[in-house]
Length: 201
Image (cartoon, rainbow, N blue to C red; front, side, top):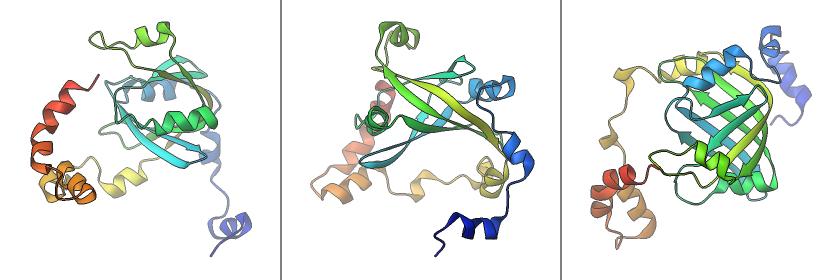
């Protein structure tokens, strides 16, 4: 087992200069372009209960660039666990990974989060008259792009590699396995599409 940084560096060596230079402490014009068209981001946080990695998605540009040092992310309805937000309250450090369909590169933002429920922020993110409960403000500390190797290896955007949903357990079946045979998996699955549609915002 490797237990020291020196052991790791002996195997991997030093990063290429380009890999270091692409990290900057602000959102420049190129990085802003990625954020403004991204419909999906993964939010990573840490707290006393452990780590959390949460998917967030909405119309492209739903993560708003306020200025070159600040982002705003509305909290849309979910499972109400609020693991990420609980973590931010205690430990504000976080990371975002932006993914754009069809694009090989992804974008990483590291920073610190603040949570607000001020009307001006909630109102500005209204969709069909529905407001988020809170908005996460991110003070940007580092931004850099990842090359396309991971997505090329995974063939993530290759339609011929897409998995048929029927090959996997349904949401209802997964609930039933955890909760017991009394859980009505068929009803849960039958009503799921409508439930998702009516609770998006």
